[in-house]
Length: 403
Image (tube, rainbow, N blue to C red; front, side, top):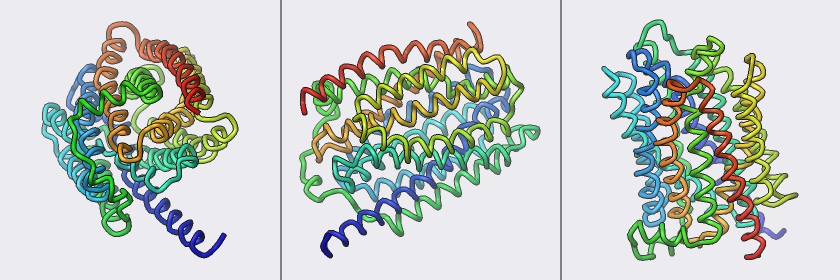
């Protein structure tokens, strides 16, 4: 390796470290809030369907925000979009900490979702600094940073929350989440370098519907969008009802939920940072994607039928392993299939579709939980894995035919 190659490798490594640090700080704040939301809503005497609507309100905002921020980052750059969105999310946590009622909390969660629709921008920045052949592994490392944030955040939130004080007992963890967001924004301002190629800014603006038509006509991207939507419908329902389910089945509270998420986050960080990349190098993205879906289905069934909490945690671990090796490959397959100047847009459409799934998923799961049985959302999510596997098989065949 000559001097120029060494300098390029060093620059790429520094950019990767900075970006991963930003992701960790941002997701630590997000992860701190998510497990607390069911208990926060119940502090306002909200029934189960209103608890799940808190998740859906966020997803409605994210559905609107993801493609907008992704396309904007293609035009004006990743850095300014990240500064704007991360700062706004941090301020929304402060507003939520002082919410006077559940209706105000719904409005704040909707606005938070709009500005939190920046995941495709982060993915675009990662794709910008990564050669195509390394993207699956790098998306796995990015997922490990997400998992590390989810490990840190829920543990802190569970320890700081004081449900006995009602809504006031959640102010401190929400303000800490805002602090993580501000730290992430400062890191972007101080250390993140613009990664978007300048030529991409010269591309003409086009209506959102044109990008959607292009994605849906693509033999690989269209199937990935379908898998993301189907699987997340079920997974979002589990996410929204998990706190209610563990409380009903095992008497858990915020502390136990936080510790469980911490342990699963450690496992997720390992799977995405180490296991995912190795599996892709050995089996390729499509086969690894299929394996991840199988693990998710197995974990959902195990959780839903768990007679005691250790079995439920084991099922949670299977879901974590499956998700950790599934979702990075969805992102990597899109980034490899999309043209370089449409990275943000295509990734934004994928995240927008996932946000759309998160709108209906929690509402449907809340109805299942209240009207059918507490374990019914797990059965529904497990069944949705089956069409996901069908589309994964189609992706595998089309990737081979395009190679």
